[in-house]
Length: 160
Image (spheres, one colour):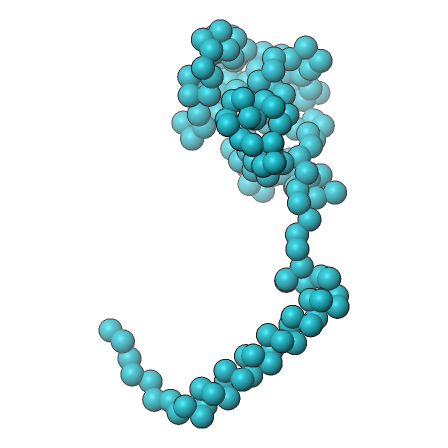
């Protein structure tokens, strides 16, 4: 139900003028300071954070795509599934050190690179950083939690 609120046009006009003056003042501050609410955010640049390993949790659950939804090639599906250990982690992930034992020879789909994102997900190279960062954030949250040290480290790294 709408309530009728009495108001005078004089009061509305004065309030409108006051908002306009504040907007002009705010625009001038943005131009001079280069910081604040209106400052343009620095684009996040994707980078791997050592000793995270969230992407090595291969069985992430129903909120993530299945290998069949990601890959067109049945050999990629088979390879991916062969890497999943009984606990859902990659069999090559060393939990004590949080490192990959085959890092230099890991499959192409384990590489977070523009051409891999374009091949697997159809993501244009121009959007790689944005999509890779978003994907990592979602994965880290799913594996370690939204209040995790891993997530904090990642967010700092991509803004550096």
